[in-house]
Image 1 (cartoon, rainbow, N blue to C red):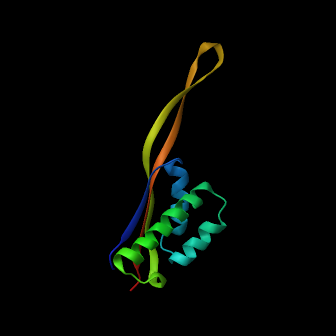
Image 2 (cartoon, rainbow, N blue to C red):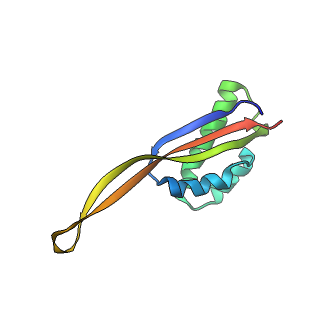
Image 3 (cartoon, rainbow, N blue to C red):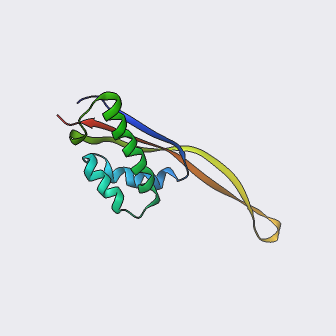
Length: 113
C-alpha cells in the first residue's frame, strides 16, 4: 500500500461516539463515493468529516502529487478530545454534572494499487 496522507480536525464539538458512526460508514470507500455518502447524511458529524476529507484530498494532490481518482479512505476515526465539565442546578438545592465532550477527527487517504 502506498503512503497515507492525513488530515485532522482537533477539538471538534461532537462526542467521539457520535462521530465514530460516520467514520465507520466512510472507511474503505473511494473518495468520491465517501463524499457522496457524507453529502446525503443528515448528521452533524457528516459535515465535519466532509471538511476533513476534502482537506485530506487536497493534501494528497498538492503536497504528495497523488492521483485523486485512485484515492480511497484508508483510515477514518474519532478519538476523544477534551471534556468541559459544567453544572446545572436541580431540585432541592442540588447540582448535576454535565459533560460537553469533544473529539479529534482523523481521515487518511491512500492510492489503490
